[in-house]
Image 1 (spheres, rainbow, N blue to C red):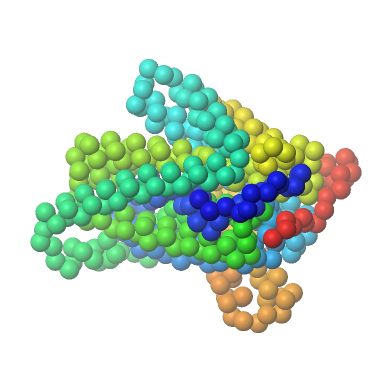
Image 2: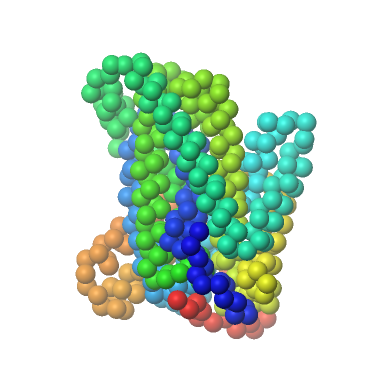
Length: 450
């Protein structure tokens, strides 16, 4: 791994060591090379047998928002990500609300990864109770993130490598299966994109709102702006390239899966539909390999999202949106916000014992898409309005990203929106108390050095 020249970090500062490759690998591991697999059955059901098209439409939507993240990272190379961008353009109050809602996404991701990994591991070793698995995985995520950012980058490199090898082997088995069951005509090969008997734009867009979950996590790259080499260039490139690579890989995975599965045959379980597709192509061996790979992928995602969450808390703590003494503290030896890593690990452990995976997953999109809308809005404000740069791309691209995110957000289930609004209300009450009654002073924004 390429790193910057070895120098002692300045006290109280994050270390700038991550290359473009490190950032892309971090994003891919957070999103996961296997990202469309858990969603395959749900999108298949919602889009009436069309999975490839929703995945590609979602890729276009996320690329628009990824471009906004990258552009704002050029201006504000800070660990605070969406919180920093919105605060800088619209003021500390709106920035605080954005940080609070995206915080829900960042805090829940390690939590639901802990839940999913624990249940998957319990299927392999049922003699160990799920709560003990929860303790084990929460400790694993925390201890790995306490080693320092360079060690986390090395972990991402190996996780991405292992998952890529498994996905490549799975695609080989599926392609071989398709060739052996041929020959196939043009109608067979094009059906995953368009089946005239079931095609409906309403169902396609419903499936797209679900397929967008394939890309959730790309924004975490921007939380590493203060640890990236040349962040004004590399954050934009890494964010866009991560979405593009994920989209191409995801479309390939779901395309061959639809060709493998016989038309009209029901999936034994929609939530794990892709695993049964793998079993159809490669038998029980591939069935278990994909099961194990999904567990590995979720472990990687849990490690990565805890890393990003710790940096978001650091950005908010440094600006005193959260108590600065605790959340803005940097471990002088390892150059990381160790308090935040431990705090998130404890939250993941407690939450994994109290709430369900389904509730946690539904709440993720509430904060994520509100923050995405905020970043797109901040991009328009900074470049097109305040900067008076009238190039069409500074208006059309972020505006399109805003509208797509808004459409996705309004289609969330009412339970997720209710719980999300409760979280938002809690944040507003806390903010009013902190600045009106506790008389804390919050900076508008703090930008890390590039």
